[in-house]
Image (cartoon, rainbow, N blue to C red; front, side):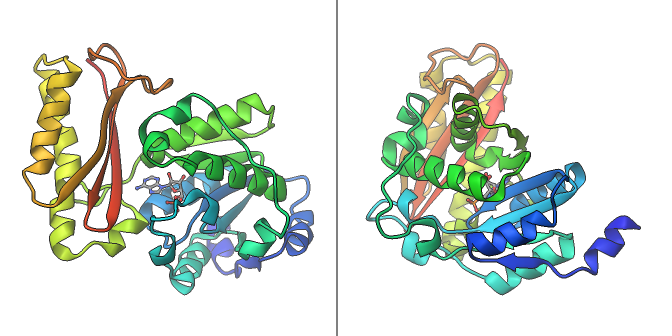
Amino acid sequence: MVSDLKQQVLIQRASSTGEMKRVLNSFHGTNIGFVPTMGYLHEGHMSLVEESLRTCDHTVVSIFVNPIQFGPNEDLDVYPYDLEGDIEKLESAGVDLLFQPHREIIYPEGFKTYVQVDEITDHLCGKSRPGLFKGVATVVLKLFNIVRPQHVFFGEKDWQQLAVIETLVRDLNLDIFVHRVPLVREPDGLAMSSRNRNLTSKERQKALSLSRSLEDAKEKISQGTTAASQLKQSIKDRITAESGMQIDYISICDPISLQEIEEVKGRTLIALAVKIGSSRLIDNCIVED
Ligand code: AMP
């Protein structure tokens, strides 16, 4: 009944810190859940939103395509965008507030302060996209300071990003609870991503080799293969069996430190990034030996 009532309320929208303050004042004394996104929302994002709606009194979502986390030759200019569709989804879910700042609000002229999380950013995406996590950590801390949430929700789709946020929250004594939300897949196994929108139908088909190669690796581990080199080779073979696949990395590592391991022992993360045409996709899974 409560959620039915909530669905009739229009989402409030703010694009400046002043507007945010005004709306957030009306939430004073309640639990605020926050879901930062770059928009073009899909069911993966919505699972974070639903978790926040379940856990918190008020849910705030941000849509901000953060320019400083993109490298010079990356897809900032073609990042998919559908504000109307996003608002519709957030409104019917019952989200209370959408923060949708202009770039100048987040990075006004003279902006000079950045957040750097060391070591765990040396691996996986941090290695191949220098500056990515400095951009992510900086914007996330700024958003946390604007929204002042007690709970924040991040997806395991971006495993390393979650590790960076957890480290940031711990190291800077932020009084925030970080919720990990499982990766949501399409029915055929493809990890949901806003970037899937930019795939041609042929590329979409080829992209299935990412999740399938992870499934194969899981199967091999359950049959007793533990050598990371062997597992990586079979993942590579499965993906490059499709033409035009450019593997950025395949990592078999400790899920907390993200350090590469040689033998799968206990809980292990398998993570990969592959370029298909102009899109770079990531996927991961956790395995136990
Ligand atoms: P993005 O808009 O891609 O920056 O993602 C915003 C948040 O949604 C991040 O915490 C992501 O990890 C999460 N997310 C994106 N895709 C998925 C997915 N397929 N399953 C679960 N969470 C996701």
